[in-house]
Figure 1 (spheres, helix red, strand yellow):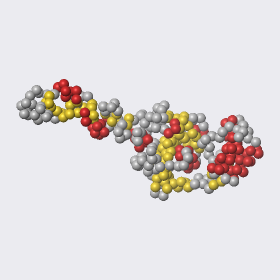
Figure 2 (tube, rainbow, N blue to C red):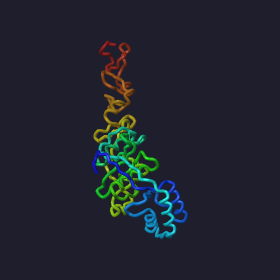
Figure 3 (cartoon, helix red, strand yellow):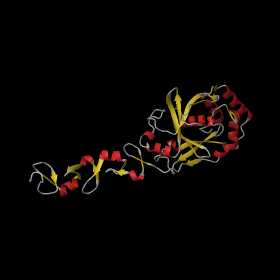
Figure 4 (tube, rainbow, N blue to C red):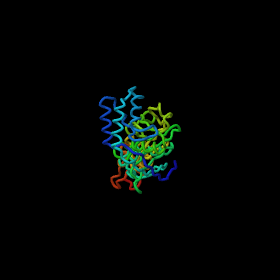
Length: 306
């Protein structure tokens, strides 16, 4: 897999939506529900669809489907085959595009959780980005654990974008996929926000068979409450509202009283003797000259003598 190289990949024949609904209705009338992330490809390396469904029920529920039912599944599937779809995508470690460039309008990674983009890059995660001609149309995050890939927060496709991208990536890599619970340091709503608390792992059947959850355990980043930029702990500034800001946004909104050192909104500070002074210190330690309208610590104005 090469970074910043545009790949073109065509999936094999799929079962149409109508075919999927017909099979689900047939099977689930008498048997437990099928997995929501089932691969409706006609033929995979594990065999054709009817065989895979029969195998699933036997392994997951100890149910042996009747041969007649398996044959009916096959007939419905063959009657609802659609050609595989062609996808154009690349992989990049540079998460520097604008919000919406890859179907990700509204993503919190460009909003309240924008510090997550720095977390991704600093921890070696990458993006898989989908293209339509020269226009971006979808993306998801990818991380290689060494044993398997983790994929989450997909955008840009109808229905379940994350599942669609996991399917495409798993077939491209000639691996299998599996839905899991995904978190970072035991939370799904920290800086590294994980949509739906779920992701997909992609790897060999042996590597992912027993994995049901994964925690990145990445050090969390604080983001500026105004611009969202990641802030190192040593560079945090706390505003008068108690929120954390980067240096630039802090001094755009706040400053400290020269006398007491407390942080205040800039509009609540007054210049006295060329220093910013809060209202409390101004009232208790300064006098307003009625002639020049300036505040001074001395009772007699040094400028006009009043």
